[in-house]
Image (tube, rainbow, N blue to C red; front, side, top):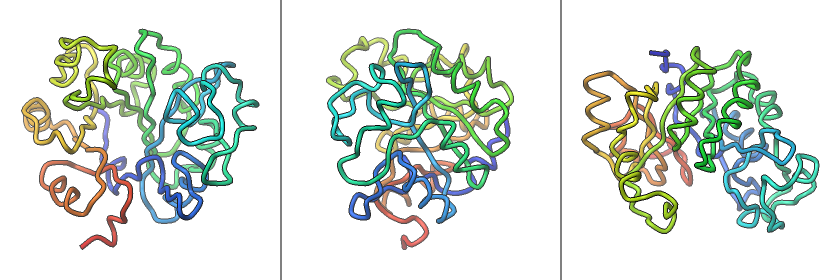
Length: 252
């Protein structure tokens, strides 16, 4: 199994150390820089643009955090960079720009956002970007297809699975009840073999997660920790937290 000790040595800032009141939007250069300056690891989200470039953005639609209502995949990188965020001066970054910014200073955990169509293109493009990156870096995804692809193309790096109980039926309506069951129980394990598990803190402890953690020594991180109380819970059952909305170093 890939060594993950350096990846999870410090708390992980969810989409960077973002704070809209300070003009730092999620998944943007200023939020990532704030995390670097504070010594936190960084979690980010990536997807593909129309011209097949890896860009740092969470949603498939731009409207929640930007002044555009377009779809990320339907715009080129140049067009995406022309779009203003609602609450800050930053522009959308490419993954390569983020890699250049982080430059090995802190661990970087990259979540591959999936269209759930069995297309492995995003994993391949990410592998091309980070294959020679020298700093601590890992990939992860909710989609087992992308996890398995990352394992094939980046066997020297840690590649993890993101999961939860899948209770939000509206959000996951494109998945059948049986598919949600399999994903929540990590039943894809024989063919994905992830190096770590990132699980919803609200759904922990979980028997499947505990089994892999205790019997196979698989590291477990959790998302998204938003209070010191959740952090205290996570400390007992997880190897590291993915946090936002508070400063773990200042929490009692």
